[in-house]
Image (tube, rainbow, N blue to C red; front, top):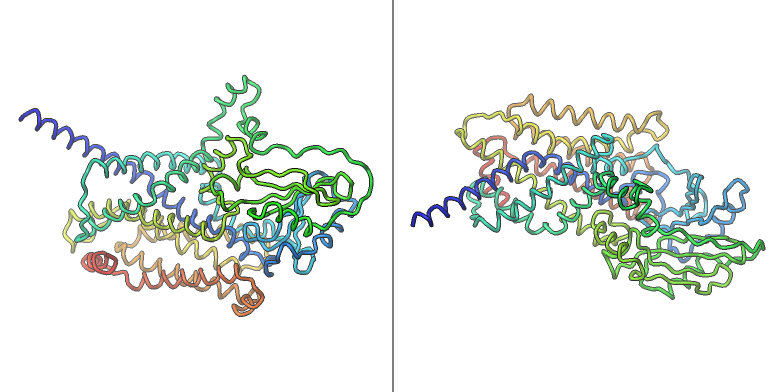
Length: 527
């Protein structure tokens, strides 16, 4: 009997220690992970945002099979100052939602064209970096090496946190009671992460690998190469991204088949591939080839990053030279793409992208519920009518809620600041940083955190609602014009920003400002 009691006590003690480790790790890494997920959601939407943010992309998406490629390619190649370095890459409209046609090669600036008019457009380059900045905040890039390593180690910590959480669920029979705030937060913190566990752990693992894994691989790379190199890409690059074959020039001048005709032939050969670009080699020579590369949506996880199924045709007569399917890739390339597929989402369709987005939104809520569970357990030790001041609670408020109006300010300023304004991007980022820091100061200054959260949500809601309105005014396109001219991606971003702003205003209006009312809010309004 005593031995059985001892075993039960040991099991209970082990579970308690496991819970404490989980709580401590969660408190340590949760806010950083929340930021990674928050900005990660905008990173998932990067293809749409980077079209919305640029005046040069305000035209409809062209059908890639009907474009007059010759009218744009020939003048570029006829320019004696343009280097004829193989390959010359032509990105088709539609790749990553970009409606522009882009011609690029080494050592020169990419040429950007409106395929509807065949005219070159002036790319904004470093005059507009909204999508890039939101994506870089996702992994700590603006804070240089410190930010990258911090987010990388955070990702490692979160992996242990999630695995520990799974062990807790398997060992402890939790009650799914939602009659109290702690019960509500506990239930949905667990339930959501059980549902999103598989993609979440893969995305977190690949994030850790990119932030600290590559640089941390220096010793093993040095040993594996027997001292020849310490750069991992020197070993993996030739396998993942093999160089284009060298073709001997015939030094003649031959008429090429139009790219759209070659594209139609490639589509007949491989109808399952969504072609994204073509690489032309030795163009206008009898040895010329056109290599069409794309993404096979019927075999997700196995292509889209390093693995690009392709069809290579002769530029002279369109005859088939070679074809590479998804499964022709070396096994290491298939493994690489399968691991990084969920993190990059290159070339995937809208359904897949928004499905992953919905899972990450749920994961963000799960982290929020976990933080609020910790704070509620601390606060319930005092009577409900006693005001509490928790340093971690104020920090959480500024990080988790304060970031919303700060990000809304980024979108609002995108079309408010003139594009020819000096230091435009620096000013935009600086105001974002100042506003966010201001939410930190205000969060610690105000005693009532619920009232502060309400104010932040109101401000964020108004800023997100005003962003599309400012866009309509300064871009010169009304919603009706965007629809009639088939700029659906841009119009979709405007609608999404407006709806998101309305949601924030609705939540702000419903959110109570005292402990008794907040109890009813979580139990009755949300549950």
